[in-house]
Image (tube, rainbow, N blue to C red; front, top):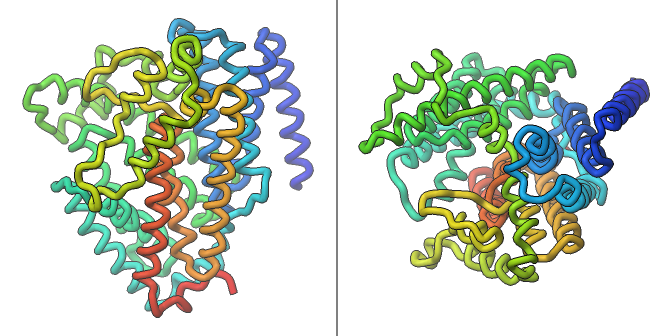
Length: 444
């Protein structure tokens, strides 16, 4: 069966190659697109059996760095600041290095053994503990809704466990288990409307996409339908979000109106400034990266890691130890490596590929992306090994890696969040399951 699927996939790849050649697509662009297609297929194959978090990170990165720019070169080439061949020569090589580091050097899979998980989640003590974690996390969620403190990171990580535990309860025999999922996602959606920022809701939706195929034993066709429906939903929310944010931010008081959002959502109202091309720009990091490629080293020399290490050292210091530490300025590196000025309040981050090239050059960016991929792979292997003794670690994988799925965000902030979340999750899981480790054993 597997061999037949591989043959079908190979035939599809050959047809795509011929189609790309027919339309005069360059070799580098073709290679990049084929790698992304391969990763997408691998992600689909793993869904329902494992937690394919690295495949998800790679697919989103490939879409942001290769597919989006490929389309932009054909419909809005003015947004790209170097030629397609020059852009793809850097990007495809770096992306291939990233894929190699993540998947092809001592890789390990986070297996979702549905039978074992359901057996663990059928224990009354486990259900009681998971419910307790859920309600405590909800309290932190509500507190973070209304108050901003220097401990926001800790609060965010703790309330992320409300999503994890809600998913875990779907494996249990609890009669009203769907209510837990509906409740926390509804609260999050209201929070996003209140803040006029929907990135967190979209990120947490990936949690459902990862686990639902396993919980309900979905076939590959049903998984594809689920993904298509998810993309349609996110597209509708994006359209409504843009129009809603435009109306809210145009008002001096910036008064949040939940009924206004739903009116826009169901009326499919568009912002005057919202176009298909602007949407494509938002789901593509190509414009930012090409800007960096054109500016460095012509006007700004590669900094050989100096800026990266300085930013990372500052980011690692906990705020509660040093309240006066500098905030991560999402404008600074963009302005430094593109020569363009951004007004305060505007946030444009330099992603992993952009920072790798700006700091270390073309070949250096390949090595940098390989090492970054290896780091993600090693962290995943570490968590998988820990999960054998405690199933909470298995479900925490999404919380730890969710920031890394945002391929367009500032790299230093993303990596800093990944490492801090890792350490805090290790501590948090240890505390809540101390003296109860036998209950949580996933593999004997």
